[in-house]
Each structure stands twice: as structure tokens, then as C-alpha cells.
Length: 76
Image (cartoon, rainbow, N blue to C red; front, side, top):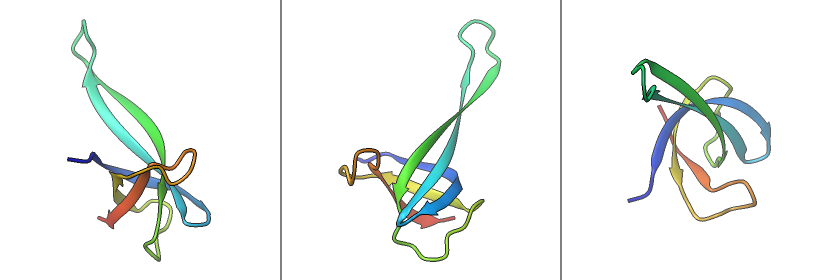
């Protein structure tokens, strides 16, 4: 099964590409405090009308370009 992530769009300046910020949480190894980690993914976009701040689901796909290996699946 291919990976799917949920994140927020932070940039729509490129043609057919959006930058999605995905936040993950994991516990500190010693102190068990929950830590947040953000990572930016460039995703291919065929859906019209997406804007900065929209929540989207992205899915893994074959490489489209050097940095794009994700595709926008749906707007949440």
C-alpha cells in the first residue's frame, strides 16, 4: 500500500505544484514529552481552486520530477 499523508498547503506559486507542510508527533526517547516535527513536500496538483491554508491529503506516486514524488489526492 502506498503512503498517504495529511497536511496544509503553504505555497501555490508554481504551475501544477503545491508545497504541503506535514506535521508529525513523536515522543522524546528519554523524557516522553510529545515533540512536533514539520516537513515540506512538493506535490503534483491537478485539482483546481486550491489555496494557501487548505488541508489536503497527498499520496505517494512514481517520480514526476527531481523533487516531486507526491500527488494531491483530495481536498479535506
